[in-house]
Amino acid sequence: MNRRKSETIGLFLLILGLIGIFLAVVFYRSNIERRLPKLETSEVNTALRGNIITKDGFSVTGSQKLYKVTLDVRNIDPDKKDLFIRLYCIYSGDDEKAVRKIIDQAKGAVTLSYKIDARGAAYLQELSRKLYKKKIFISYEDPNTGVAVLRDMNIVESGESRQYVAANALTPMIGYVKKIEKDGITKTQGVKGVEKAYEYYISPIQDAKLLGPKDIGNNIILTSDSNLANRVDGYDVILNVSLKFQTRLEQIIDEKKEFLNAKEIIVGVMDSKTGGLLAFASTSRYDPSNIRKQDYKFLNSSATEYAYEVGSVFKPFIFAVLLANDKINPLERINTYNGVYQLGKRTIKDTHPEPFLTAEDIIVYSSNIGMIQIVQRLDGAQIYSGLQSFGFTQKTGIDMPYEQVGNMPPVAKLNSQIYKATISYGYGLQATFIQLLKAYNVFNNKGVMVTPKVVDSLYKDGKFYVVNDPKPVTVLSAEAAERMKRILIKTVEIGTGKRAKIEGLEIGGKTGTAHIATTGGYGNTYNGSFFGFANDSRGNSYTIGVLTREPKKPYYYFGAQSALPTFRAAVELMVEEGFLKPDENLTAPQTATTPESVAAAANATQKQPVQTNQDKKQTAAKAKK
Image (tube, rainbow, N blue to C red; front, side, top):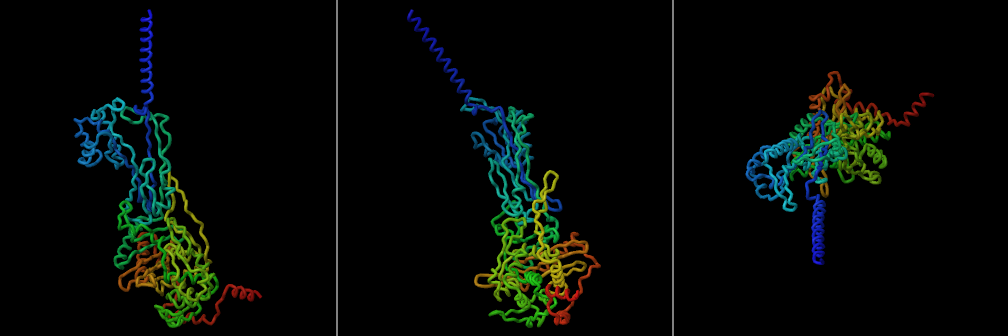
């Protein structure tokens, strides 16, 4: 009896133990979901960087999605491996030998490519479905779980690449990008130029996210609840620059650079009323899609990041400060000492020596000696504040990154006769090309300063948005600006800028030639420049600047020989492209045609004292009495 009872209890315990083992196994198997195929899958459709589009409608950049192709080589039927490799390479365009090497060396999961474009990815997804149906993909048993695994090719996004379809055109203005990793996806980020300045707007905004059950081929089955987020790409950036005009201008300056054996030529063409840059060209360009080591020196924009002593193109600003402070009468006679003057230990000589010149003809014939005489009428504070009002030593606000500001002597030094003298003809201070272009525009825009703008607007979903629209600022009276404009026109009519004259257009401007400072003094290298404007009778008005850096062709280092012909070529191109239209009825203001006749005309007014605003008020008061 006791024996039977013991056997019964033992059998019960054995059954109970077996049940426990069974339940333990069931519990264990139910808690290893990570090793079992998931019933749901998700997909992310990454948003793309916005495009950069020129004013004439050409998209010069674009972003393209890249996909990677992965598979487990154990899922390929060994008898059909050759067929798979041939078909994959036909659809992907990859090299057959390289793919075969990857597959032969792999023992499990492997990546066949990281650089499949969107079209190729769609083709490969279709191929994968066909190969699955044709049983080229077979299952294998996972040694860890004992579960049969059957998967086809997996084509997923690996990142994006930035395309620059205009090669090196518009650089360094549009800039370039670098690659960054974000959530396992390769993205791009602006480093220079417009790409950097508008990074906040142009970068992708939101990726699309999908969630749903998957089919046996590991593809998502879309349901009404699948869409978790919509894809929102970055804003497109619309430039003020015309691609056709810019590229033709780049061709012109490339030829000029070679002829002059110059380091670089920069040209800016700005709408005088709006500040929009129709062209912003440099000979120092590069292909943003393929930046090489020899391109590194071109990556910075010299127009905004290179500050230099500017030379005689600076003279009109000193003259304008004199006008603003009622310190000069444009027609009064100034002693220019027959073109030779002793300034401290230095002997100053004029290129166009004259015993006397009217004040305005100091600009017309670019007399350094004349500038030395008239600048002494200003104190240091007037010079400093006056030049600052034109934007010197400050950022222009142009929509380009890393803008430099240059420098200027402090007020205490500007009270010195020597410092006054040197700054009056453009030495002893540094400015950038874009600062000069912005400042010259004041003379062609009724004394109003506007900000240079590379970008016109942003575009998205059929709407345009303006995000960079600084308010214009009046820095010179309309009367003083008009007087300066007439002086610069006269400079082109009879002075140092004569070669810029084009019949039927209103053109003014000023040449400049500046020694480049070296350690311990000035060497034999120069920068030549010409800044001015070109207007027609239809109301089109443009401010144009040219900087020729270090021309080495003998006798061509003067601005009149290096920069001025490029200015004229730019204006002629504008006429050809329809931005300016010469008017046969447009005549230049009447001016004297020789230095002698100018001096004679000025002599008639020389006996009259300079009238300040206070003098004019007193005269008006007497007239009323």
